[in-house]
Length: 337
Image 1 (cartoon, helix red, strand yellow):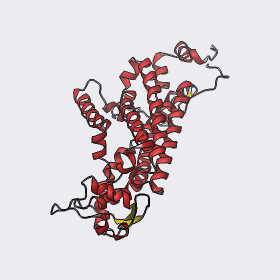
Image 2 (image 1 turned 90 degrees about the vertical axis):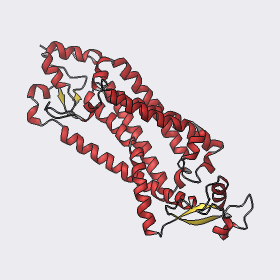
Image 3 (image 1 turned 60 degrees about the vertical axis):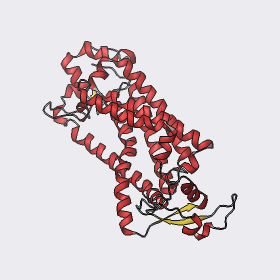
Image 4 (image 1 turned 45 degrees about the vertical axis):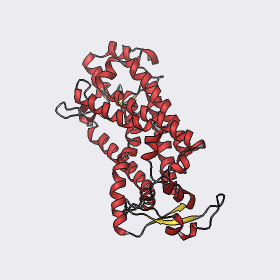
């Protein structure tokens, strides 16, 4: 029997033409395990587990603290608040935080299988909200990248790559969902989330890189004299003996500048708590490298995960492959037998 393919009734057509077990097997995404004895990565997030929600709440409390301007300014790299304290950069960084932090938290329910199955409307609305928030977050990230962690070419190129890649992934996830390609939709949604999660991994890589860089003791980063003075006026240039030295004493090139003149000096990157200017230089040196490294590792690890969890060809019957081939539904102008 031939059943005409209609976009809105495709799932019903499958149910009427195939046994229920075969339909469920056909619609199982390629990124899931066929063997029930294996644990799927996303099944580790159990909504019934109280520990899961306690951990999510604690992370939420930590992230929400960054909505406070004073808390955010204290946790920035030394000198970054000099640019973010006012003007366009202040507005952009606040909008960036107000959009990306909620979006990051709202991504988690999207990958809970039971919640997705029982609350499809919530899944769709939450997904549209995440896409909207992250799109705004990507735009504001492009606005502040010039002043974030020094804003050198490594930082700017990494931010642009991550923003464009995540935007493409979100578009592909939306596009495949509209075309009822559920397997591809989930894979692209996972790519968007895992790629953007490299921001978190970068914070783990940076301290290790800073310690290694300090041991070499021969890396420098260029900073503006006015930025170094700002660090001192914040009270962050105190030394182990409690004294404060003028910027001109540490960097003689900054001694004769005016309020309108700008000079740049080389600051050694080193993890020395008595020299926040050097700590800031070390963080600026490692952020771009860490972001590139984590993005590549996340992307490679996710594709390996997809490859390892993809069902083998022998596990898919000829009947199933006639409906779903590579997690893609047949075109609209075809018919389902």
